[in-house]
Length: 394
Image (cartoon, rainbow, N blue to C red; front, side):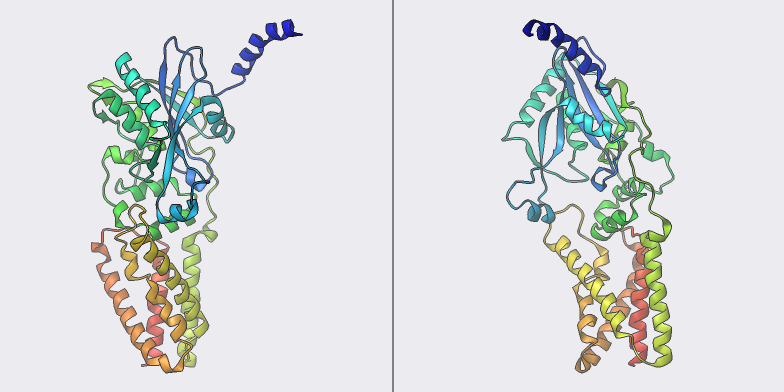
């Protein structure tokens, strides 16, 4: 039996290797690949993922993954919500690392880096140091220091020169400006509620025009920039290999139906507010339950923005000009509308609220922050209900 196993073992190993359709092309010498994984179906996969893969002849390939976090770390949830997002760089066997992305149907492209022996040795040494327990943890930033920008910086450090990326596919489409928010909207187009939350939580810090290097925060964008990238006057890559040659959005879920989108829902809220306002004017009485619910929800959102702006350390949550409209003071009508003695206080609050909304609307073209289209009907509903209360209690 031992002799039989000894004879069959090489054959079994060869069959196992051929069973991995995501295997990289074999090279006579050590090869380093910059691997980009295109968007998946989950919201945290919508911009894709990147890793560096090292293939040594005669050894299993190894992936250096910059997107790992530890659920068991102390107070993980609280720290994550606050923005203290500590990620890790880890060294994984390539086959199980890639199997997940291949099986989920995501496009994967590997760019072979054109490194000389000196640069390759530097990069391998740098990667070995980055995965050490004392070095592997870093403060993740979703637009400035993430799983795409960090490995790119490692390659640049090994080369000792700046990498000049090629024009991104994003530069060719019809968006008005290349900003963090517009790139996010491009990749989140089938997930409008997720983008609605981003547009609510993140302020003007993601609305400035980006350099090409800054636009590489999205791995799917970076993939299109690596093919013609240069470093020190030489090509950065020696070619690309489609590990899983499927459509870029093959794993992305289908678009949200228009009637379930934030825009449709918010216009429905405005339509309800308009109908109730017409009824209120006719019967000369405010619909208190609607105002209590409407302003209560806005007040709770204002509390969330207060936390994001003043407590959290998330990137670009401040300044957020929506805070003029959505803040904890919106909770006042929810309480005051049920108290007869507070009728005058609520009257003056609604005057101040209406004036603030009017001035914000008039000045919005000068505000350096892009807003979600679904905010407009909610903004109008807010003005409408304030005007309704002022008119009926003047």
